[in-house]
Length: 229
Length: 338
Image (cartoon, rainbow over all chains, first blue to last red; front, side, top):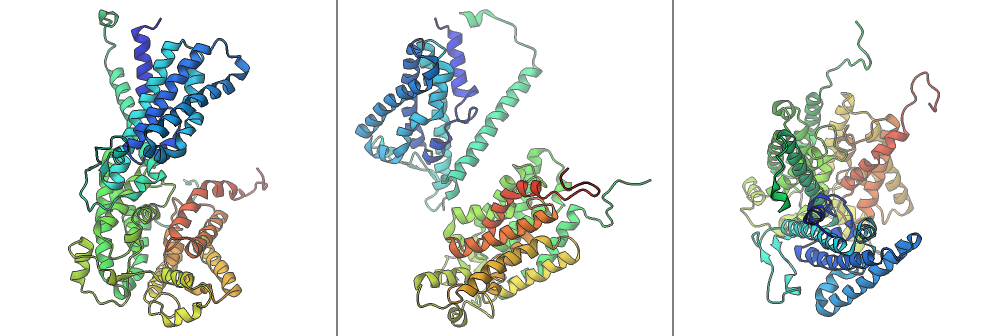
């Protein structure tokens, strides 16, 4: 069975401690190519969350039936089948966005995050935990890609949520900086994504180091019954 | 008492070296201000101010002594090189953006003075030409009489930017003319008839380059830089441009034109000789300089950018760890392969 502590650990690992982009630094190719605005980053992350949750639950359910020696091809087969479903869903319902995200939706198959979670978690844990792991790893990716995309479009063009009309036709992007902002094009190019991702990783490490220093300075908190209720 | 080697006879502190580099830039700056316009002096002031403010802020954040590092002049040299490679009538924020990026990202995020793998000034140039290609390729037409007041207004954004004030660089003009009409155009004819070209390179700019050459030779005479990098840079640039010029003089400009155009002279003596981001071994310096010269020619003639020196130096900066590893000098008394 799954306890509340298990759940908290999985959520904390996915969202912060083992964040796919900031700690594991996996899936850089879609990260660089897609996060030219927040909407693209969010939509690709949503697609990846769907695939990861379904792939994790499928692999966790079948984990005792899959021969160990050929597990990787079997995993890929399962992931590929799920990605095909998501790919067709995007193409049918969000066609304009599908054209923008292009090859990166089918490429979720080869996204190392998906295979890494299937191999490292789902193949060793029961279905319920695995589903949560897939979802929260995806949520970690979601907020990182959304923040990176927002920063890139803000610095690069002065807008926020560009391309939102492709998801919600009655909404329009926000122009945050003045109209005559010249646009720092570097932020929209792949090197800009690398530089900003580097800054975000540094920011996470700085926060972690500060938290560790604070924990070391304070005496350990007395154990209370609060965690058990 | 004996001190261990090296036995330094002269004061080679960072601030002294940087002061001499700044002094060596003066002939080129003087020619620039006289022939192209005094706007460059304004840009130098803006870049210096931005560099000092950015440097002070980063030193404070990093908890380093302010006075010691601010007075070493390294930020000032970076700022001057940025101002000299940017178009003189560029808006003030362009120079500020480049300078701040150079100091904050290219210098301090990599560990500060002595740690940066890339030349900060060239990083600034590359970042700005990639981000603002239109503004970075508007160069003032030489001989254009614009009052200083009006130039100042253009830089500060108070006056509208007039297309008539600016044009392409001589290198760009040559490339565009050759591209427009491939078969019938002759380089010699172009150089002789177009107003933008002077005696042997771009009008006015040729003497600015000559000013840099004088300053660079003085630096060499003062032993601030060694001969390896400039000679290798100029030789490689002259060799490839000479070979193609001999092959087809109608389509390729002469080595003299290339040596005195764009950033070649500034690059050979002041940028590629950067002791931090460049190679440190004597043979390594030859390889580094030659590679930069070769790449600069290839990028400026066959590439899409107005000049190739910045990208050439950055690409060679990337190779420096490998070059240094492969060109370690033989230790006296040791066999070739330790």
